[in-house]
Amino acid sequence: MINSSFWCGKRVLLTGHTGFKGSWLLLWLQELGAHVWTFALDPEPSPNLFRSLVLERPPGKGWQHQIGDLADLEALRSLVKISQPEVVLHLAAQSLVRRSYQDPLGTWSTNVLGSLHLLEALKMLNHHCAVVMVTTDKVYENQEWVHGYRETDRLGGYDPYSASKAAVEIAISSWRSSFCGSASHQTPFLKIATARAGNVIGGGDWSHNRILPDAMRALIRGESIPVRNSSATRPWQHVIEPLGGYLRLAEALALDMVAPCESFNFGPKLESNKTVRELIATILEIWPGDWFDASEPGAPHEANLLHLQIDKAHHRLGWQPCWDYSTTISRTVRWYQAVHEGSSPVTCCLSDLDAYLDSCIFQS
Image 1: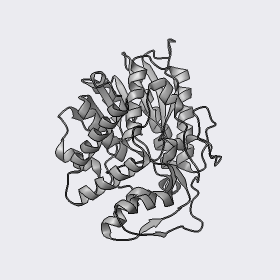
Image 2: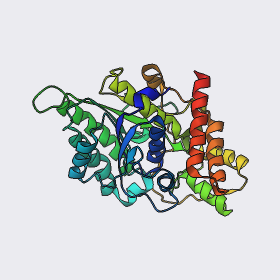
Image 3: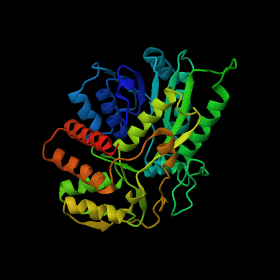
Image 4: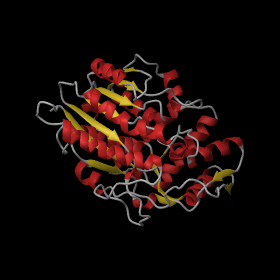
């Protein structure tokens, strides 16, 4: 459970707020009463969940909006100086595998150097600050295992995106070892951990070359769903689940409940590991339609089997997923149906958030 009293009035710096996960997290932080400063690139072209959020909750009412690039160290330093954050949630990244093949250098620069720029900017703080650096489940050297990866498993990455995220895990660990401490060149105020989440889905994701938003676009248009790799298995998880994990991890860091040098997996229960074919079948039970095999000969490599062990987060943070697979898919598809029929995206998000929190209370 998230401690709302911890977050009420807390100064929070959130990066990547114009993206899918970042928009959801910004909305949740607003509901918790946090004072939020944000930093990210311009949102992707419409439709975009962040644009809907801005229309209903414009900046200045508990949150500050700044467009910027992680390559701009001075802009980050200026923002840190103004915001004086007590918590940092770093979600900004180039997060698409296929885009990383098109722009590998940009992907490496944003994900590795951008993250280090943020840590450098935070060195000026003279008060304690909990820092959660979000990476991905793809940081692990994929062995196509049937069992899940643990936080101690070897890092690696075939594609530029996965490798850049594995590299940033190493870079963060090195930075923390070098610059966190009591020596003259170090800071005693930063508590830094990394969070690794699985494939997230949920209302408001309009990214291209992701199976769920690709499916929703096709169904909205009355077209067949293009499916690239129907046999690939992924840990399908609603976006709210890992976001709750990030918040819980930040609380634990701030309250010295975990060591500030750890990584945590946040994924769904084992039964949520399904093939893309199974995912599409479940979607079509809710929103009738059909699909076709859009596999591309010679397409860039993508992992086939991937899921996470999450017992560390359960035992150390008291975190566990609340929604099962069917609830996750149902809430997601019905979000898109409701918005397509004219409902407010923000209202639909708040409805999902309320339902999720009720589920967590019931399970506890």
